[in-house]
Structures are given as structure tokens and as C-alpha cells.
Length: 337
Ligand code: NAP
Image 1 (cartoon, helix red, strand yellow):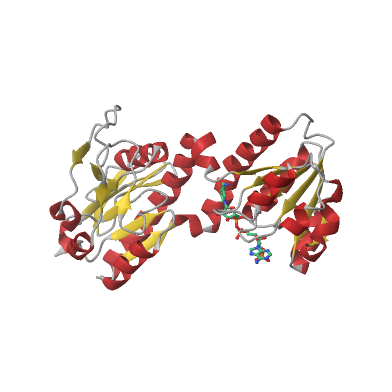
Image 2 (cartoon, helix red, strand yellow; image 1 turned 135 degrees about the vertical axis):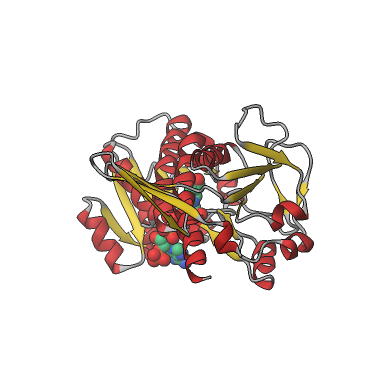
């Protein structure tokens, strides 16, 4: 039985460094001078593909004593002691407890991207069928193929970019990258410039706050009364999104965070030609890029900034969240079996 296979020892040190041990059915918990650190001893974690961010996650799982298998890391130079490189096979998936896919998951045909491998990696229906029914699959976001395969095989899929904590932590490198883009693409300082942020979500709020603290004159467009009140409370200028066309007339830099067409040709027609648009919303963004180009307005779509400007930090954010999630989910699973 799985419970027996995953029987672990929990060691608790008290403040006098005396210790006792007793058996538990969850990952090993080390509690040293009040600091709790959860261990993944006995957990089989398989990583398929990814980019530089994944290296931080792998490092963390090895540190937590998981048995780590790497698929699609053939060209990886760094030597992860304690991890084994393998080819994708049914056997590996059958024995995997936690499957970690890249932030972008798979494409609609099941291909998994890896910057560490020149071979193509493709997950098929057969792979999902072969998976351990208790597996937990982690990705940043999922496309239809991955969602459907998990649904039809009743496999647990967790999309971590959906989570508030991850989105808020990720807004930090996103905003730093967005500021860098403004600096690179304007001949004025952010300080003293007229900036607009569209949306007061996780990214919009961090963006507006950073611009304000750099001395920009910041207005923020939102649709909810509570958001308009929050913008006012933050010392910024709120406006309703319906007023967007009047609000763009004097703006130097616009940051869009709303994943919907906001900066239409009609709106862009009222914008000064020197305005720089940095569209942070997920592809295809919220800007009519064709019309912006025609009007001579510089408009840049800037996806995936955390992985570009700060892969190490972005990887650590994922690693921290994943290690907590894996522990909680595997512990719940064992507890209910
Ligand atoms: P979020 O917290 O959900 O915020 C989205 C904002 O857009 C909210 O203010 C929301 O307002 C508004 N919004 C959504 N649909 C709207 C609509 N139809 N009309 C008016 N307002 C609307 O999302 P987030 O985490 O801030 O992320 C924002 C975008 O940036 C996403 O597309 C995300 O994928 C992307 N992103 C990009 C990067 C990058 O590197 N470029 C990094 C992280 C995230 P309500 O609350 O009123 O719905």
C-alpha cells in the first residue's frame, strides 16, 4: 500500500536540542529551534522541460530530499547531484508522485518546451493514461490539451499562476522589467512624467505604486468603485475606464494590464504621438498594435517579463510556492487514503 511505502520519520528537536522521533505518514518535518522545514523524502518528483526558472525549482526539490528525475534536460551543463536524467517513458510517469511542467505547460498538441534539450518532447494521451492515479501535476498555466487529459484521466492539475500569492510575488519582477522598458524607450525620466496604468489588479497595483514612488504623476483606470477608492487612497488619480479617451490626451507612458482590447484605434487617435505604450497583459495584449504603428505611436507587447529580467527570482517564487503546495497536497492525499 502507498501509505506503507511513504512511511516517514518525523524528527522534532526542541529548543534544548533534545530530540524524539516517531512515525508519520507525511513528508518528514524537521523543526529546528522553531523553524519548520518540510522534507520530501520518498517523494518521486519528475520535471519535464522548462527554462532557467525551473533550475531553481529543481534545486529546491533536491534540497528537500525528493527523488528527482529530469526529462528534457539533456544539454543542461550544471550537475545536479541527486537528480537523474531520463527519457520520457510510461515507467517514469507510473512511479511519479509530483510532475512539474514548465510555466507554459504544454501546447495544444502536448508538446513541452525545454531550452535544455534539442529533441522535441510530446506528452500523448497514452502518457496521461499511464500516470499514477495519485499524481499531482503542476504547471504555471494550462492549455485545453493538458486540461482535457487531466480531466478525462481524473488527474489532479494545479495551475500556480492562478494563485494570488504567486501573481503578487511575480508582479515584482514584472514591474522592474516594465520600468526598464520605459527607461530604454523614452528620452524623459519617469520622475515628473505623466503615466497611466490600466487595471488595478495584482500587476496594476504594483506598477502604479512603483511609478508613484519614482515621482511620476500617475493616473489609474479601473471599473470597480472599490478600486477607484483604493487608487484615491494611494494618492493617485483615479478615472473610470469609460473616460479613457479623454484621459489619454496628455499622457507620456501607458501601462496596460487589462487582458482585453482597451487601446483601440479610436482611443489611440486621441493620444499624443510621443506616448509610449507598454502592454503587460497576456497575449495578444489590449492594444491595437496595427493602428499604433500606423499613427507612429510606439507600442510594445511585453509578455513573460519575470522569466526574462529575473529568472532566478522568478524561479525562487515558483520553487517556494511549489514546495509548499506539493507538501500540502501529498499530505492531504495520504491523510485521506
Ligand atoms: P488581475 O489581478 O486579474 O488584474 C486584471 C485587471 O484587469 C483587474 O483590474 C481587472 O478588473 C481588469 N479587467 C479584467 N477584465 C476587464 C474588463 N473586461 N474590463 C475592464 N477591466 C478588466 O491580473 P494580473 O495578475 O494583474 O495580471 C494582469 C495581466 O498581466 C494578465 O493578462 C497577466 O497574464 C499579465 N501578466 C503579464 C506579465 C508580464 O510579464 N507581462 C506578468 C504577470 C502577469 P476587475 O477586477 O474589475 O475585473
